[in-house]
Figure 1 (cartoon, helix red, strand yellow):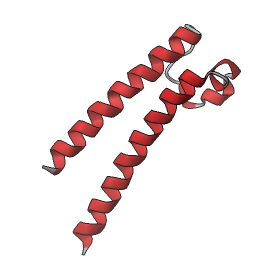
Figure 2: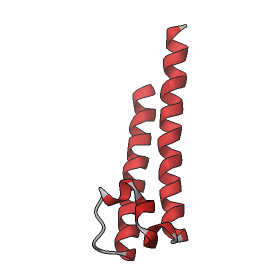
Figure 3: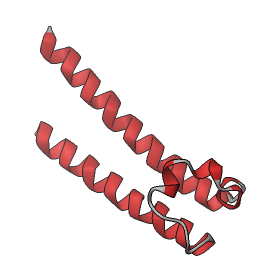
Figure 4: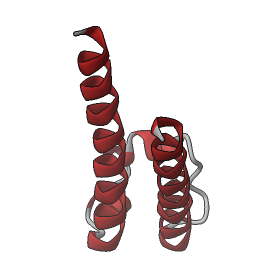
Length: 78
C-alpha cells in the first residue's frame, strides 16, 4: 500500500511539473525547465498569477510527499 501511495504522489507531481512547464511556455516560449528552478529570476513569471498558482500547487505536492515520507520513517523507527 505504501508504494502505491508514493506511486500516486509521483504521478501527481509529474503531471503538475508538466503543467508548470506548459504554463511558463505560454508566457515565454524561451524558458526551459532549468529556468523554472528559480522562477523569480524571471519577472514575467514572478508577476503572473496563473504561473504562481500552478507553481504553488507543485510546491504543495512536493511538501506533502516529503511530510509523508518523514512520518512513515518516524513511525517505522519506533
